[in-house]
Amino acid sequence: MKWEPDVPRWQQVYAVMRERIVDGTYPAGERLPSVVDVCGEFGISQMTARRVLKELRADGLAAMQPGIGTFVTELPQPPNS
Image (cartoon, rainbow, N blue to C red):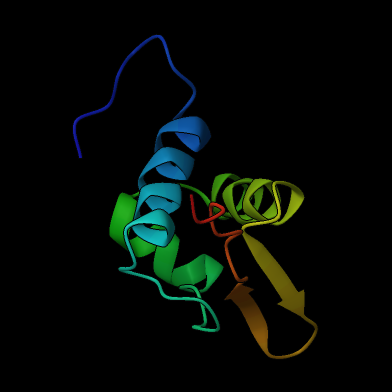
C-alpha cells in the first residue's frame, strides 16, 4: 500500500477496510481479519490495527464478539423509491 504522508495510517487502513465492507468483499456476518492479520497485510503496528477495528465498531460497521473476533454488521439499506 502506498501511504499518504499527511494522513494517519490508521485512517488510510480504515478507509480500505470500510470500502471492503461497503463493496461486499467483507459481507455482513463475516469475521473481519484479526489484529495480527491486519498488521501482516498492511505492515502496521498492533496498536494501529486495534485502532482501525475500534473505529469500524464505533461507526457501526462491525461488532465484537469477545473471544471470537470482530464481525461485519448489516449495513442499513437505502429505502426503495
